[in-house]
Image (tube, rainbow, N blue to C red; front, side):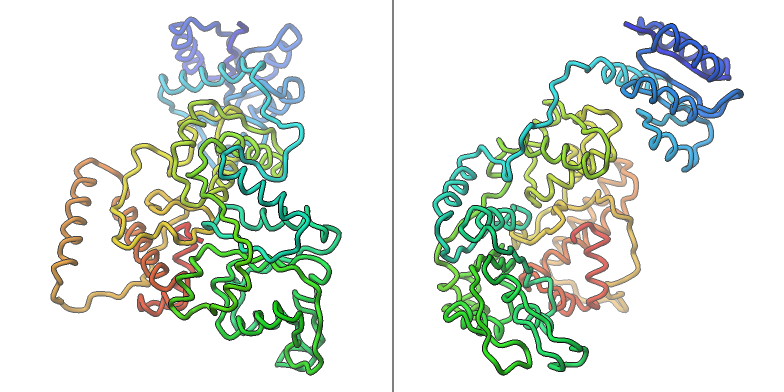
Length: 504
């Protein structure tokens, strides 16, 4: 094996690392400046290069650039006593394997160098890049059922209702149904009915005439007209306002509609595919969804399984998303070892496939080595992450749109505690049920404090706020404004909290 090269003008640093690596039976060659290193490259290359960032005769960043031009795959560890942001950013932008601030713990430095050695010797690791990536991935029996259904529906223009948890890939299925149908040459138009304010949704769907309302300066075609001859995908149909459901039913019945402010009937030849994470039968029983519209949409129903129901698909999806993230960011794709894959396969993924995609994007940016190990996985997958007792009303069916875990105690978003919850002005009578969970809270906080867990205030405050918001959204079936009203906070506050807590 080739030696490890140490480059530092500080003789004590060279001595400490030389002795520590010698005890590990690792060959070492030391240099005092970058010029000597560049000259030595004519005779051979190191297995790993460990370089200081500020040295006479050339900086470590300049040396890193020269090394990467000659040997792009060589792991380079940058050391510095100046732990500033610019140094760290420059190191990683230059392709450094890791950034090691001084003073460092010698055993940890040796461990890091050993890891860089492992990375440099992985030249024969199987390349995970698939030659031809299919539009949808899934070997699990439940996904094979979905594929078969798409195949059977390929020559039919029947209305399809896709159900499944948020993040499970409902729009991907809708696009596949369109692509393999006789309307594939026509447009595919998607609209999320839950993401558009009620006052604007009608205009979005059906268009409007000039002067129909304030701000309507020109005539505008709606989504039904835009999708003429193709497919219209209505996502989160369960959240559509009740009065608009009547208009949608008429379009589905006879293909006719009126633009907002219009008097002439319009015709549109559109295949409708709808999707929802909600139980529409329950919505019908609650009087929130028209029964006749439900039956009109529910001609063929496709249920997408949650990712936790098909763990055997996690490895292929992980490799695909790591490749996709690398392409998006313009970097080399990370690989993932079997131990890390095994840990991912045991995770519940409350945010489903979208959460796995986010994790792979995080790994592409944050994992130090080209091969991802279990310790590189994000904090929400840690085995020792503290758990918060689940509320009595299950929030598993809640829409978690960005794939954030249900217990966000270690969310990466910064904390901003600025109120949003009512201040206690005077002592109040505490009901027995409330007293019970307050006692649990006291025990939990005491245990965390005694265990020396850092940031207990921030962690428990985040968990408390997240559970309140979860419960309110569960009660209001995802309607944020109504949830804010029930909590006694403003709608801007709940929107901000959802973003800050990673629940967006």
